[in-house]
Length: 147
Image 1 (spheres, rainbow, N blue to C red):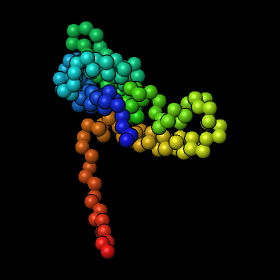
Image 2 (tube, rainbow, N blue to C red; image 1 turned 45 degrees about the vertical axis):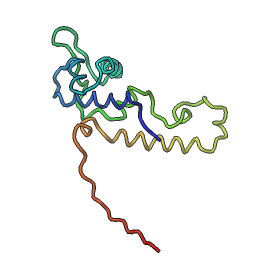
Image 3 (tube, rainbow, N blue to C red; image 1 turned 60 degrees about the vertical axis):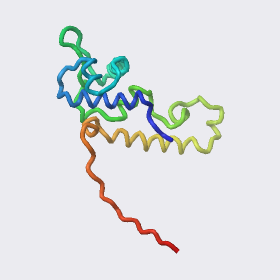
Image 4 (cartoon, one colour; image 1 turned 90 degrees about the vertical axis):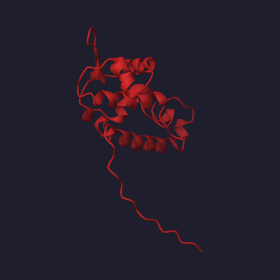
């Protein structure tokens, strides 16, 4: 099963919480309370997100965090990469020279193609998109022939 880590999932929750704060500076504790996550986890995530340039921190009384840029300018790919590093389905789809078989591997180019498609999908969804429910999809009836 393909899935992002819990930490990455929580990072999207933290980021949507900040996006919903409408550019206000929010303390780490307030983010944790609003997101219903443990404060140490939120503090760790905010540090990683700040290091990646996705959030800005403000010290002192009234300090806290806010998005570094508009929610519509931050993609899910940005968040995933801030927590997990460069995106790739396999090690060889991200970095060259990690596998002795890469020069004669028949599947490496396809893993790179798959990684690129998933990366493109992640770049196609913004933080602003994540703050609102998706539009309902049309239901397509399926006919099953029984013999």
